[in-house]
Length: 570
Ligand code: ATP
Ligand code: MG
Image 1 (cartoon, rainbow, N blue to C red):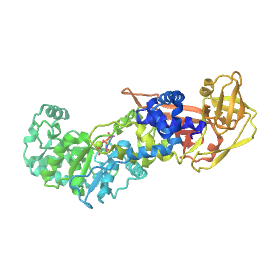
Image 2 (cartoon, rainbow, N blue to C red; image 1 turned 180 degrees about the vertical axis):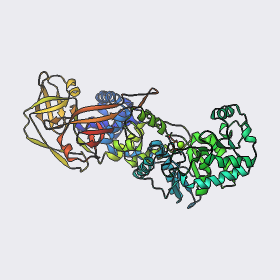
Image 3 (cartoon, rainbow, N blue to C red; image 1 turned 120 degrees about the vertical axis):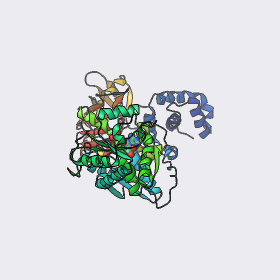
Image 4 (tube, rainbow, N blue to C red; image 1 turned 90 degrees about the horizontal axis):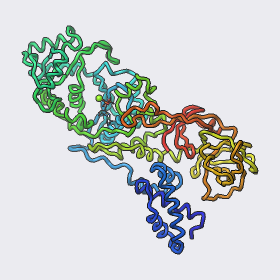
C-alpha cells in the first residue's frame, strides 16, 4: 500500500521521468497508467488520481527540461542512472588501417591563445585513439607564426591539458624543425615544384581569384634558388614569398599556388631573431606529420579542401603519407569558440580575460566548477562524426551535475533578501545536513529572531498561507506588511507545502556571477554577466576557495572568494 503522503511524491517522480523522456512535456494519461501498473490497489481511485496527476503535470511541464532533470538528479538519482548509462560514452569508431601499438596521433594547437572546449574535443579524440590502439599521442605546438605565438600560451596550453587529464607522450614545437623545413623547401625548388614570387600581395590575391599565372612562376630553378637565399637577407616582409607550384586553374582554390614560406621580421617567443623566413601551416603540417610518424592525422572539417595540398606536398617530396581524417568543429550555443574572436573581445574590453565565465575556455569552465571528467564524457558522447551539430549546454551540464552532485555541499543563498520575523520557534539552534543522502557533514544554524527570505518567495504567499522553511519546519504567514511575520507551526513533513530556503541574521553579503549567453541572436551581448547579490549563510566561512557548492533552489557554483561565487549550472 502506498501511504498518502508518499503518493504525491511517487506521482511527481513519474511525472518528472515522463517529462524528461518527452522533451520536457509529461502526459497525464501515460503517467497515470504507469502509477497504476506499479500499484494496482490504486485502480479504484482512478478519478481522484487523475486530478492529482494533472495538477502535478501542469506544474512540472512549466519547468525547463534542465530544471526537471536537476530535480530528478537530486531527489531520485537512482531513477536517472539507467537512462544516463545509455547516454554515456559511446566508443569511438575504429580508425581505418590501424594496428595495435603502431597508431600515432597528434594535437597541434597554435600557441596564440587559451584552449577552449573545441580544442578539448580535438585533444581528447586524438588521445583516446592513441590509447585505444596502445599507440602514442603527440602534443605539437604549431608555432610558425611569430606574430601570433606567445610564451604565455605555450605554458597555459600545457597546464590546461594537464588539468583536462590529457597526457601526451611527446611534446614538441614545429619551430624546432625550421631548418629541416628549409631543406625540404630547397628540394622543392630544385625539382621545379616551388618558386619565389615577388609580385605585390594584392596582385597575388587577385591572380589567385582569377586563376592567372604570374611571370615569377616561369622563372628558372637557379633564379628561384637565388631569390630564396635573398629571402633570408635582402627582401623585406611582403616583398617575396615561396609558393608551391600547384594549379592556378584548379577548382580547389587551396591548390592555386599556395604560400609555403613568408618573411616575418618579428622575434619568436622561443627562437628570438634566429629566423625570419617562416613556413605556413600548409607546408609545415604534412611534413611534420610525416616525419613524426603520425599514422592518423585528425583535423576539423573546414580543412577538407586542404587535403589535396597536404598529399601533393608529401608526394612531391617522396615522404610517407599519413591517413587524414576529419571531424566536425564543435560549436556551443551562445558561445564563441575562436581564439581570434575571443582576443578581439578582450581587446575591445567587452571581456576581461581568457577565464571570463562567459567563455567556453577550459579556464572559464574550471572557474565555474566543471570537472574535467565531465568535459571528456561530453566530448565522447557527441563522438567524431562529421555531421555538424551544436550540442546544447544542457548535455554537458547534466553530465557535470551527476559528477558533482554527490560532492557538493548544499547551502542557502538568498538573493534579494527581505527581513521576516520568526515567532514561536522552540529551539535556539538547529542542525542541518549539508547533503540529504551523502555524508558531507552538517552545520549548526542559529535561529535568530529575524530571518531573511527571497522577496520573490514571500510575495507569492498570501496572509495566512502555510509553507515550509527548509531544514527548519512549517510556518504560517501572519503579517505581510511592514515587518512580515511568520509563526512556527510544527516540524512534521507535509509534501503539499511549498518549501523555501532562508538565512539568519548572521548571514553574510555575497555575490554570485551568472554568465548568460555571450552571443544572442547573432550579436555580442554586452550585458551577459549578471551579478546576483544576496546573503549566504555564515557556514560559507568554513568552505575553501575552489569548492563547488549547490545553493539550494539556485544551482551549482564554485566559490571564488569568501564573498563571491561563479555560477555553473542548475
Ligand atoms: P581558433 O579559430 O580558435 O584559433 P584554430 O583551429 O585556429 O582555432 P588551433 O590552435 O590551430 O586553433 O587548433 C588546434 C586544433 O584544434 C586544430 O586541429 C583544430 O582543428 C582543433 N580545433 C579548434 N577549434 C575546434 C573546435 N571548435 N572543434 C573541434 N576542434 C577544434
Ligand atoms: Mg589554426
